[in-house]
Image (cartoon, rainbow, N blue to C red; front, side):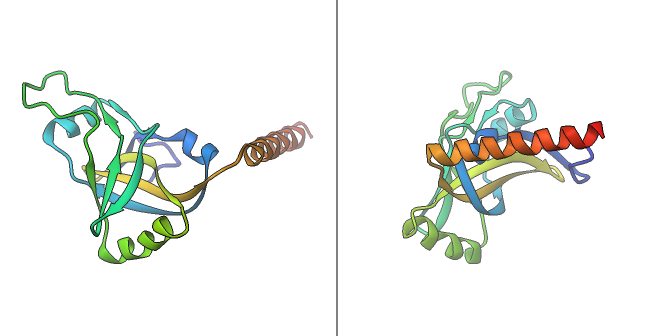
Length: 156
């Protein structure tokens, strides 16, 4: 059964929780992924790691690199490579909008979560800039303060 925060028909496979800590995310997009059969079966088993992955635009196409999808246990010798480059399915308009920001402004395409939506594998990518150490400290202090305020309001 889906959680209350998830829309119906969406099953989250993995989230990149570190992404919002490491990057300041400005904009997000949903993209499809071109996958092999054993990759989809491995995703159904939850064998994915988004930790060090990132996206790039090359020759007018969007790609996701360093995303680890573990091998499918029941696969044969035709099993997939865990760290292969995978194509993201974005519209031409979205790619034209993202490309100058990545190339000229020095922003990064960061995968935020990967999920099944109506039986298809989708990935949510965000356009972000890496945070400095002091930005991370400020964000943590702000989060702690909000948590304390909420706790005090709850007591009263």
